[in-house]
Image (cartoon, rainbow, N blue to C red):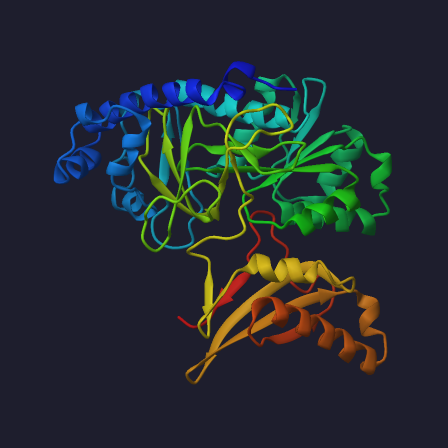
Length: 431
């Protein structure tokens, strides 16, 4: 099902025309209503009349998360506070949170793009959507909630955590769609097995997972354990929240709602635009946001764009699945390491669980990387020789992928703390 065919299937020429018109409008809005942007544009000698088409975007400055923090809480708002009907904020671990605001029109757009995403995954008004994303300042819970209601589906607003209640409601309410982080979905599948619940007996059929990078291998594992089809939903609170992009049944990238969010890929080092198909940092400009429009916002997420036709019939450009973040990248002894590489390696080893943690430390002048990996409890009851062989196999496989030596520590099942939100994969003790 295509939720909004005129917008999701328009020609590239039509999309270009729409984006250019909306881009000119948003430039006028931020120039006249946001002192931060007006000053930035004046510093480089640009006025709104200089912007004619979407191609002119390359002449504008970037916006970063630090800019949002520096203008905390409402310095980047383009609407008066009297027109703002909702606030959200990021769950940043350091410093001030990044605050975003929404007008009524912004909420309507938010609901629209999430409804598109759910429909793209095959959900309809006949479905019951169990929202296990956190509610509150995080955009995930309310984003999926409003989008599911826009679609006409029933919503189970359970929020994150309370796993025993999640499992009860999956059974008693007959939820057919689960929305959560992928790491929490993996945790639910484990708990389901431990509770003796047969996934094949549940009506659950679709998973909408996002808010953290996850590998195709983990998707396959979740699909097999929960007996569902899993889809990747992408978004970030600074742009709107979930619904910026979503994968379709073709599983060949995520369709971007590009009538609302214009994507670019730039080099993380030079910040120069990269051609379609090249991997770099994903940058978004909001084309329709009222309360807090952003120009060329650096997401720090690493991806690429694909404008080739898709089997599903949607013409919107697709972004590759996020495999890491430019600011989450670890540099260990001169080698770039992403947590997703470790996840991919572990999911190829039957004895390993999809729960791991990377601990980075420094001994003298040498960086060390310890990888803690959960394995089946039965492995610890085996002979020490067999345990040593498992250790050696996993260690060799990880090192062959990362290209550096690691300290591997095998731990028992459920030793690594489970997260009800985004999984904490890295502990860096060097700073």
